[in-house]
Image 1 (cartoon, helix red, strand yellow):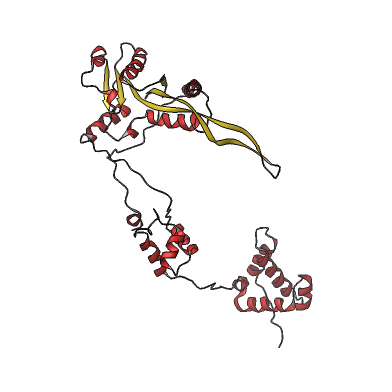
Image 2: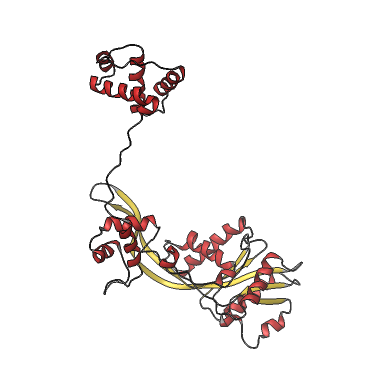
Length: 354
């Protein structure tokens, strides 16, 4: 049987030459392009095989594939792959099992428990299905529902101050962060048996007391004023507020607060002595409406978390240093919420899947 003659069109030759020269072409495709170009020039199978360091059988295979399907014949054949081990029914059983209570003695499901309960499904496939549906068995959602019957009115009052404050008035967010611990942690270098060294701190720590922080943030500028106290009582709160109010003589001051009992006694003589101050209370269980809470989060992450202190004075110094650094480049927080609603608990995992 005479060998198949390879005759290329100008378009096919140009395509094969491009595959051959391109640095991004897969090597197996470039190899097949070189074979066809050699055969089109009239080289024999044995000569072509020697030049490309392959066998004559391989050359014959790709010559026949090209003759039958042209350029498309040089692509890899479709491989069906290994058949599925588990059907869609197994996936449905895994998801349905998540709605059942875990075995006695366990607080929640994990991949191994699910596989053991189903008996005929491997733990690897269980985890594969969970990843496919983006289900994390370790993650837990939490929520805080405001039960304040005046939620809408209070939220509108506070958000209105943020978005459209009264002219020539100062809007301040005030809150306290009590019981900040001064924890001393052993730090230094640790030499490992393999000769390497690592730095860090021991899991053991020693307590050196606590301190309470009061903070007031000016909404328009982001500037923060702090005060340090040993306790969190009405007298400490009023002492701090006296310092805050003294910064804005003869100006109307609007203060955003939460419902802590030290903030709102039944008969407030202090407010009577400061008629230019008006208090605005956020709804119960809605601390996210108080912008100073955002600053407390920045303080904890950047100055307190993982730090080592041998005295409460050192904690106060660290807070003051961070406050000074923050105030140098302070800016108002951009309010991005277009609508404010009472929080609602998130649905269970099964409802989220549906």
